[in-house]
Image (tube, rainbow, N blue to C red):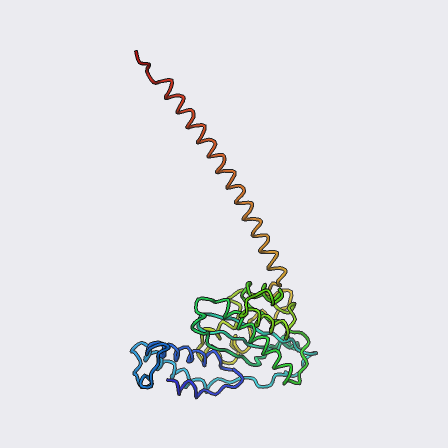
Length: 297
């Protein structure tokens, strides 16, 4: 299983979702054979029936990868001006990563081209802490931008970094020295290589980097797929994108808190009214019982 997954050579990450699916399965196999306490003889331990079926299905998918084609020309014909660079990042308890696109304006309309992607398994000690995987995915997005700017001769007009974690988006806007070491180092790297104003929030269902974190089949990566062409909203005017800046997210959060406070205030008033009514009713019952009580002779 490990040799088959490692034999998939994809240096720039065009098929990262398919490769990452295999990496996740390999880790499941290691965990099944003993977790961290791996011995030399565990390499030859047969897979369980469940993992064996998953591995066979994975090998069948890998054989279909040679049918997938990708556009290797990042500069389309009849283009107008310079492209925008768009990155998507995501993280989960299984994996985290990022993917980068060029958004070109051409005489035929908007054209989006896949550049590259990068992913890595989430450390086992970070399971259950999705925000750590999210911030690691954001770091990968910043590194992709830095790599493209360094090695590509294409001048990018503007960069936008999209992610679906409002927590990470808010953390990027603040000074990194206010966090613990894990977050401080990563937020600091993001702030050093990117502009905090370039980061935007998008709904989770619009985040194409989700394919990186959970894996995908070859059919999900074929030509004209969402993976190769990016989400459909990228072809629309920027004003119509389902994105929010950190300022907009903070305003929505403040509005939500205000609504919650208003609801709590009304709830407190209702509880106070019921409490007063119950107290008065209790006093009336006590007076009534006292008057109706017969006097002893």
